[in-house]
Amino acid sequence: MSVTIEYIREPHLEFGGHFLHPDKKTGLAETGPFGCTDPALHPTQIRVGIVGTRATAELCERWVDECRHYIETTKTQRRTMPAGSPSLPEEVDEDVIVEALVKSLTPDFVGMSAESSFATSILTAERWRATFQDREARLIADGDNPIQRVERATDLIAEHIERIATVSPAPDVILVAMPEVLLENSSTAQLGNGGWLNLRRGLKARSMKWGVPIQILREDTLSGKKPSLQDRATRAWNFATALYFKGGGVPWRGHGLGTDTCYVGVTFYKAEDAQGRIVMRTGVAQAFDYLGQGVVLRGDPFEWDVDEHGKTPHLTQAGAADLMRKVLTEYEKISRLPPKRVVVHKSSRFWGAEHREFNELAGFFEGISAVNARAEIDLVTLDRSRVRLARIGRYPPVRGTFAMVDDAYPILYTHGFTPYFDTYPGVHVPEPWTILEKHGDSGPRELAAEILALTKMNVNNAAFSDGVPITMAFSRKVSEILKQVSPEMTVRSEYKFYM
Image 1: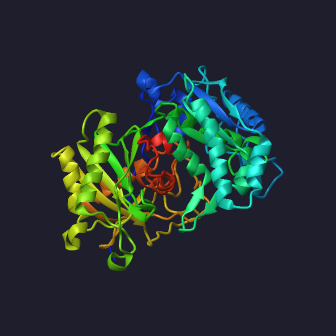
Image 2: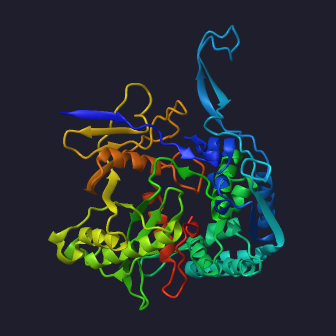
Image 3: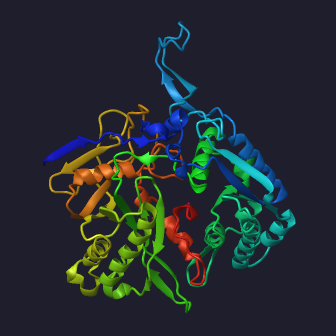
């Protein structure tokens, strides 16, 4: 057996002043978001609306005010202190397990204000606040029909989102302080056709109509009653980062990712067509650039015969070509130039000419070439690997471990022991990714390095890494939101409406 193992160095991100650092929180704290380098990418203030009951809206106001200021972390970890450590009394001659603050893993939050490194102020006003009565929520939650509960809860909150999203000037982002009573009894319901209604996804789908992205906050999280693995400083980092992006800013950009490369993730989902039939929709194509700016497009509906073709759907050649043309055209609106290179990530294999009309491989090439005939192309199938590597000691393999075992598919660890923290920050045995299939000129090592970098591009939180490339991370969530978008509803392409 031939085994070759290589370490791919931790990718860096670029922050304000073109400062490079591997950790999002440290980079933001030191020099601020990358948007500060370009006024067009940096909002100096973010206008925030709030929807909820009077009680949850008040909790939300308090949370926003708290996030304007410095928050010290309270997160502790159990650590073994060896005998003789300067932190222990001299008479202690045995190892001691202690609870200690580990600020490298959970640093203090710097605050989001004009004076902090964010250089952005959060602006709230009474005109951007809409409240409904607690008894309205309880009447809905007490209903007998679960489908009606979800629909009525969605209608109630959407009505108040519309009130403040359509004023002039409108807020940049609307926070929905969700009453716990609605989440407990009116958040999900199964439909007769096997699908599901979901309150959170339905609200995100509805809000596209008014052009203002929303962010949903739970009442028990705002009040601090719900036990959480994250302390308030960590939650503030995640909240501020997402708010900054939804408000029009760019928190960081991927250093080492091609500035003229478009990264696309493709998936599939089922939805109703205009006649009420359940059909397969082409995946959501999510396209991202090195700034993390993304566009989301859904393809045309099509029928898929499971008995004839199998459970995993595939595009026709025409469908694949049309999807690529549409998504790259939208991408070009952001970058102003067609991409010189296109990388497509998919979880299923690419069917070729042997599958006749479902020659999606030729369709992807055709669609990309229609936008830029000279573009370099890499089509990649990603999946979780069944191969596991073991490392001597108590930690799993290092994040960034790239291995080739004989002629097997290459594997990459995007979770694992992280040298920056000198520990493994996870709790489960990490699963590596594998490149099942690739078409194009790039080698597996180059593709793996890009995948590792793309695990740091989620602007919905400030975690060191998600372990999942951004092209794949939100495919299911985006699909679930689009399931709630009926044929006559507005569909926005901006990524911030799906976060």
